[in-house]
Length: 82
Image 1 (cartoon, helix red, strand yellow):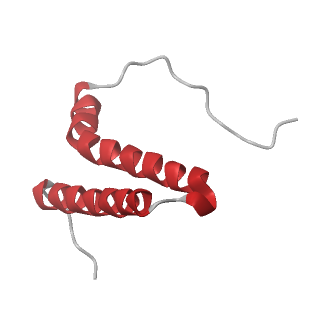
Image 2: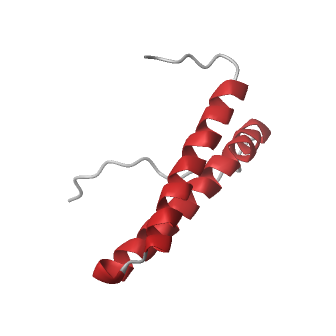
């Protein structure tokens, strides 16, 4: 018995519109991956983490925010909720 109800994975290829959306968002995806890598390095360093590792995380966080703002500005129909 399974408690997770998932529909069968379709074997359909992504549509050109979906590929375009992924391509459009790829800079944000890459920045998120960089942030994740920096956070992993900081956690793995534990109490021996250097200031350089801490700064790397902060820079990656800022980059994610910058790219997110750029994408929000370029995306038509995006509404900012305050």
